[in-house]
Image (cartoon, rainbow, N blue to C red; front, side, top):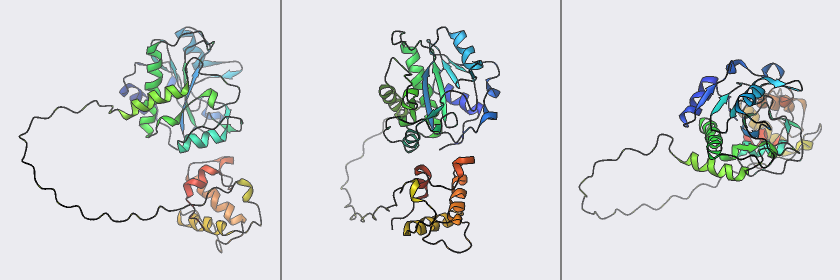
Length: 312
């Protein structure tokens, strides 16, 4: 989870990765923030435009169309590798997708199959549209693929994410096929290699020094045994949290909420799931940055995993 990059930070991150970036019209204020929240951000989503021509594709993504107002992404990646910034904030690019996919992106774990459309992706993903007809025949020039790699890596580097925070639209929403013409696994491999590189390049060579004679190594003290890794309660599922549920897990959860400064208890916490537990958990969700129905006090897997409830 991360606070979205400001326009200036996004521009700096892309250019620092070596990209040729063009600021298109009033991209800094072009967004759909009046239609819903923007952030917390969790990843980068790659699309193809289903259009030809740089100028017309950029205008389409900036303005949108009668059925889908713009911006339709944050950046358009042309065939020659130029990135045109067209939006800053919430954009109409991801739509509804699978919450299990979002959880995997947040945890940076392998992606499950996308078989649901129940979660707002426009809130959580940066979007890049690459100019391509998407018919499986339109070529992907090397310059364009490198630019996709660099753009995704730039945002991952800015947020300290790894390559598993980058997905294709086809991995998010059932029925989508974009990007078509290369695999996202191959693109993630490229992004991972780039993130392993020092963005500032190799260090300057040092002057040669006269080698010192070998010395007898000192014996190493015996290694201290590592303490056992803490064990946490796995997410018991949303249906677990029903009124009247009694379990030591509920007590352990309440104690963690109090420790995080989110306790809303008059007495307790205790083993019976109650309104006080729900109000306390809603405070925890808001602390993580969730709002509205995403902070309704009913635990979800992502927020539960971050609470780290000790095993009971």
